[in-house]
Amino acid sequence: MITIKYQKDYVMTKNVRLQLTIAAAMEKKQIGIVGAGISGLIACKYMLSKGYDPIVFEARSSVGGVWIKTVETTKLQTPKPLYQFSDFPWPSSVTEDFPTQHQVFDYIQSYAQHFDLLKHIRFNTKVVGIEYNQGLSDEDHQSWSSWNGNGQPFHDDQRKWKVSVEDTLKNSIEVNKVDFVILCVGRFSDVPNIPEFPPKKGPEAFHGKVIHSMDYAALDYESAANFVKGKLVTVVGLQKSALDIAMECTAANNGLRNPCTVLYKNEHWNVPDYLPWGLPLAFLYMNRFSELLVHKPGEGFLLNLLATMLSPLRWGFSKFVESDIKKKHRLAKYGMVPKHSFLEEISSCLISTVPEKFYDSVEDGNIILKKSQSFSFCEEGILVDGETTPLKTDLVILATGFRGDKKLKDIFVSQTFQDYIAGSPSETLPLYKEMIHPRIPQLAVIGFSESILNVFTSEMRVRWLGELLDGAFKVPSIKEMENDTVEWDRYMKSYSKGYYRRSCIGALHIWYNDQLCKDMGWNPKRKNGIFNELFEPYGPLDYVTPSTTN
Image 1 (cartoon, helix red, strand yellow):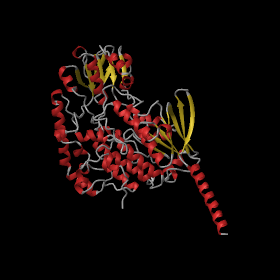
Image 2 (cartoon, rainbow, N blue to C red):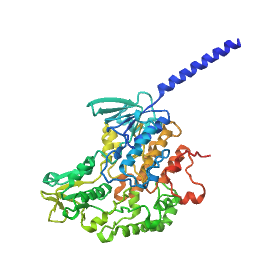
Image 3 (cartoon, rainbow, N blue to C red):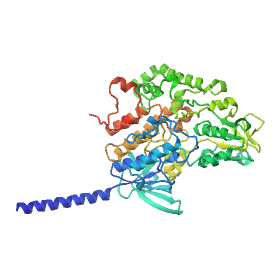
Image 4 (cartoon, helix red, strand yellow):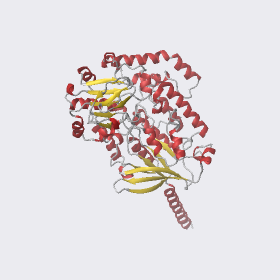
């Protein structure tokens, strides 16, 4: 009887295990990830580690996002140790502090191959719209007090997202149903920001050619050089793409014969390096002490008092860095000294490096810097605001950035969700923790909000999202989340001024990660000793392991 009972118990146990396995397979949630750039790959990797079934939709034929194709001279702007995956270091063969576009692209591809992510990616598959498949009205959404109506990341099996995709090779449309959507669409591609012009004063009035920097970057390197060769080129903008393109035009046009004009609105603290007066910039803006100098969203009385008392030191840090940039770039000589502080620049994630010998080219007359708040087109070229003589040019390249907010908004089919995600144009995007919209269920946005360390920031956010999906914690009520976004809006407007829509956490990335760590039950303190904790810079390798709290 003992034997029979044992066999019976064994069979029952085996059946229970089989049933549990089948149930687990049936309950395995599918996560739709839009985009196979850095954020999309990280999302795929961590969703797999959590036991979910990710499917990545990528419009292009390769991983890499903005790094798939850039202008020839593009290099990484962030020092290599700060731009890496926490569990996948750069190969020893890459010795440069600022790797080239090819090296960065190879690094990203290697990450995807190492973690076997490619089989989960559907290439040449463009998402044309996402729609929440449920019977709730707008009034029902408004009545929710908790995210998704129940405070959970998932609802019943009937509530899913319908992801409509176009196979760009076959020109066919297909609809996929997923349990959760992660939007990793990025901000710096696909939808160019084109300035608006009065009637009959836009590009149509110009007898030359007008393109966006996106179109220039799409050319192969030889075609790009031939495209600008022998032409009078005007580049509009003063960020990284504008500076790189201006230098390439100068090289192709043999200097003074055809100088390149850079037309810009505002000067920026574009850095020559990350060593102001020989001191690593990370010791001034990437440790806990530096963040004590900055007011934080929703801070308490003591932190507010401390930031106020230390404001002279905050001012001093900015002036220290600014003086180094002014000296190395000879900004006063060229009338290029910005009116805003370096802290405002870093709080807006507007820091970019200047190509080698850029200001030498300005000195030689190969590049002409021209400031104007507005301009229009005429037959001969450009009419600069306040001037009567046209700026003669053959080609205008608009390095005026991208409309990441419009790209994000247009992916939703529902007008209600479009309005939710875009928010008011006079406010930052209303995302809780820069990821979750309180009134859009079963969806997260990764990679829209910027930092100085974008790889590291996306990784922390995806890990937080993975713990949320696993039920390790809950998000607060909709009202509390909306109040949180209001606090972030105030912070951004205080430190980023007119660039608040960039949703940058550049000056507060440690404090921001602290909030994520606390939600996940991790110890936010990652250093050994009080001195190191206060003054040592934080980077990706500090978060390799969870380091849970006691």
